[in-house]
Length: 425
Ligand SMILES: Cc1cc2nc3c(=O)[nH]c(=O)nc-3n(C[C@H](O)[C@H](O)[C@H](O)COP(=O)(O)OP(=O)(O)OC[C@H]3O[C@@H](n4cnc5c(N)ncnc54)[C@H](O)[C@@H]3O)c2cc1C
Image (cartoon, rainbow, N blue to C red; front, side, top):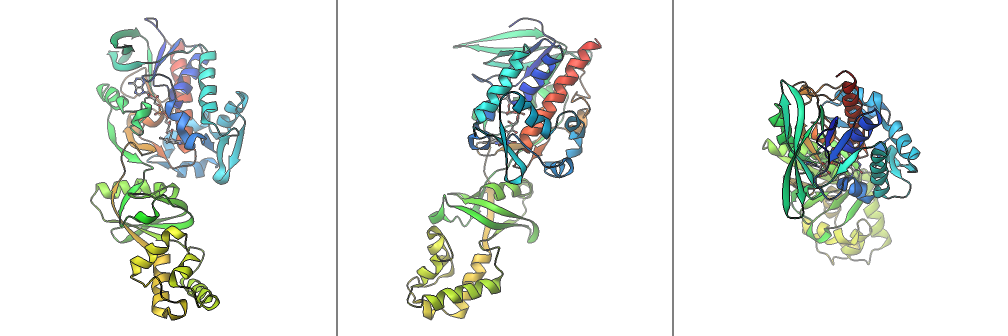
C-alpha cells in the first residue's frame, strides 16, 4: 500500500467494487480497503448462493419496490440500471437467466461467479485491493477530504497507516449478517463527518409469533396468502411462499411484509398476520370440497379428511387448534365442525411478538440520510470529496434483486463522480 492515491474506497462489497472499478476505469489511482480476509463475502451468499443480480421490471415498477425515497435513485439508474447490469456481467463471461418475477440470476446458479467477475474487472482497471484493512477515520480540512486513517491487521499485529487522497467512497454496507463484515462501521465514519444517520433497523426479516406451529416447523408453504393487520386494520396482503419456523414465520411473503411490521412493532402497535392456506377457494367452495371428501370417504377418520386438505405436518395442528376428535368417523363430522375447519384454513391467526435480529435480516433499512447526499453524484453535501454507495445509504428494496441493483447503480455513479471531480482539481 502506498501513501498517496486519488481515491480510497472503503468496503469491498458490490457497491465498493463497482465504485472502485469505475473510478479506476475513468483514470483514477484507486485503493479499495476491505476489512475481511477477502472482498464480497456477502455477495457470495446472496440468493441462497445463486445471487439474484437484478430485476428486469421497468423503471417505475422497480422504483415502487424501494423505500423510503426511491426517486433519489433516478439519476443513478439513468447512468446504470438493470439492463446495463445484465450486459456488464454478460460481457465478463457471466451468462444470465431470467426467472419468475423478472429476477435475473447467473445461469450457472453460482453467486461466486458474479463476485469473481466483479473483482477481476476492478483489478483489470488497476484497483489495488487490500484486505484486513479497516477505514478508521477520515481526515478533513476546510470541508474537504484530505486522507484516511486505515487500521491494518497483520497476524496478531495491528498497524495504523495514513493515506492521502482527495476522494473517499464509503461503501461499508449495513448491519445485517455481521459475520460477512457488514457491522455498521460506516455509520460511525459518516457521523464523524457530520452526517445524520436514520436509525438502522433489520429488514427483510422473519418474525416471532404466538402461536408457533412447532409440529410443522421447517415446513415450506406454497401458494398461500398472508394478510398483515396492524391495530386491527388490514395493511397489506402478499401471495406466494413462506416458511413455518421454530420461532414463528419466515420466507418470501413474510419478509415482504417485514418493513411495515418492524416499524409497527417498534411503535408498540399490535401486529397480526392472518394466513389463508386455501386462497384459491372461497369459504363456500371449501365447505363443498370438504363435504365431497366426506361423501367419498365416509369410513375415514377425521385425520384422513384433513390430510386431503393439508400437508401431514399441519393435520394435528388444525385438529388440536379446533379441539376436534382426531379419530371421529368422517360421516359424523358436523356442519359446525366443517365450518370451523374452513374458518381455520382461511384464517390461521398469528400475533407478532417480535422480529428476528441482525444475524437473520437480509438487509438494513435506515442509514445515511438521503437529504445530505447529492443524488446526481452520490457526493456528501457536507464534506467535499466524500461519497456514499450501497446499503449504507437510507435505501432498501424488497426481495427480487433490487438491493444489489441499488449497490451496483450507486457504486457506479459514485465511482464516475469521484473520478470526474479529479479532473477539476
Ligand atoms: C443472505 C442474504 C441474501 C441476499 N440475497 C440477495 C439477492 O439475491 N439479491 C439482492 O439484490 N440482494 C440480496 N441481498 C442483499 C445484498 O447482499 C446487499 O444489499 C448488498 O450486498 C449491499 O452491498 P454493499 O456493497 O452496499 O454492502 P456489503 O455487501 O455489505 O459490503 C460491505 C463491505 O464493506 C466491508 N466493510 C465494512 N466496514 C468496513 C471498514 N470499516 N473498513 C473496510 N471494509 C469494511 C465489509 O466487510 C463488506 O465486505 C442479500 C443479503 C443477504 C444477507
